[in-house]
Length: 139
Image (cartoon, rainbow, N blue to C red; front, side, top):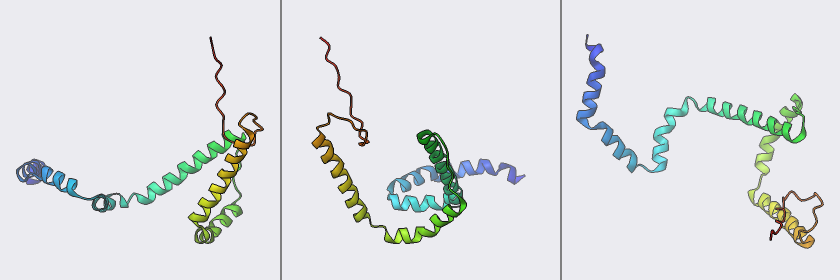
């Protein structure tokens, strides 16, 4: 008969010891790193599921975007996928954020200077920047 009444005992002990308030104060005093260390084991068993679900949703979103942009879907061949995954370690080792940022700055500088040279009055379709149409004056 005792196990049937244990749920009442939990509530009583929690109230008498002030566990809710103690936990609240302790959690508020934690740094974000400490709080993450407390939460991580709780979600650890579902981590792989979350990663796989995120990958599947990302693939679906990418396919939808490809279909909207090109009007058709093209899935890579199995050999292309395998080759991509085999090349990842080499690509990760050779990745340089500084070089990538410098390259991006060079590209953006070139686009900006060509836009400024053009004066923004002619759209040849090369530039992905959408220019706001000029508003007509009424009056």
